[in-house]
Length: 627
Image (cartoon, rainbow, N blue to C red; front, side):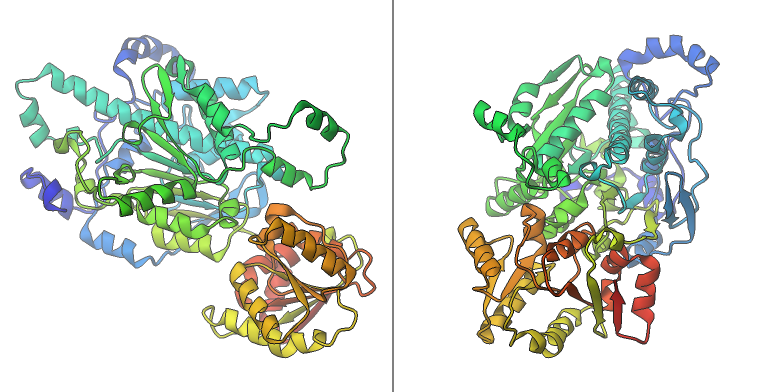
């Protein structure tokens, strides 16, 4: 594999491999102008400077600095140890309960505080126009501009307190999306400009072109393949939202034509094509689901999609071949399918993932309700040496690609409404950016006030020595301490709320072994069985119901007939806790029991609040009651 891409460049390559981090591209090497924009830029530059703008082609861009970093073997060893030390923090201007923590050197108060803020000038001007047209004021202090400055640092980012658009967080969600869209466009356009500029240089000196490429690092401007940005999204409706905004934020000169937009709208817009009669009837029906559910699942819920996007001088092409795309928008499942096909058929491959330089996983919380292992698999397939050559000039491939170091240059941005161990593990183990990490840290108030019923909430802590043993310890605690209290219940109406399907299966098998009277409602239960189970439980024909968080996420059932609620494992989504407790309406007991251990702190603090969670984890007592 290494021999296939080996290149002899003389003594300069040894310098690249043995030097430490340092040396950015010079201003001349990092151009941000398209060849066809030079005259306009030159004539307009004085006017921009007069208005206080610093041309991004003349300022030292973080793009140029980042791609020119040179890694020593010692520094690579340090990154591979994955020993992250968050040495500093800074407040989040738009969220009083959160701070940013960072590794490495502290970011300045604002990494690039002057317009155009590290953006190509035409991108900045268009973004500002769009912002002002939407009624925005004070762009410099806006959420989108501030988050863009974090993205533009090229550090890995974990933002796990994003209020999503479907929970009345459209302003924050849209601002963050705008920021990473502009960062992605900036990266794609700067990459193209650098290649275009070098192409122009070489075309002027055809006689000496080969010698120049062989001897000068300034012509190392490419990866193995063209795609540079990968966007992972959970649902087609969210991909539709993203692509439409991407097009809006692309400067007019670069979208004179948007190819295959009609096809995209047809395939990604809502599939719920109700006929006119049903549509009219629905206007007079009271919604049976919460508004956030209707907003999230009201469009195309397909979780199997993948689209390439190519930017040319004057157009945007959707559905471009993946190898000729600049950006790929996909669901995890969409890429998993391609990976599976490549593994089964040697003629197929996913080498278009070899040169991804920016990975963005948005709505990671929704993806975690699908299958998070797909994300892990996709990330493990990024930045690998390709199985074959796919065109391009191997003499212009950056040395860090040939040295299998691309994973250290890839920026990963993970956005979620909550943090769980899976998301945290991905960020810690697979995000190895040489620039460092930025991670949010938040204090939570909890959601207990949203429980509108007077429910006596009993929290019982079980003690486990390690996270590996936590699942077994939880089951053992339930079997010995909780089940004996309910197995002889005459009343029934006992609902066991269980977060994961793995836990669901273990409890189901245990209840079977006890010949218990129970019914099941999980994400895999057939619709006919769901209706039967709900009726049995409500009418008392089955004393116990097992109900999973994913079933609630995808269906938001209101279960009737609950007399005794046992939360075997706390929900990931804090909003579900009051929803489930409020199902006790009509109960004669009005009591819930929650099982937890110190390894549940992430979930616990979102529900009871950070301060209470810390006390409950460290207290000598094992029993806690909220009313």
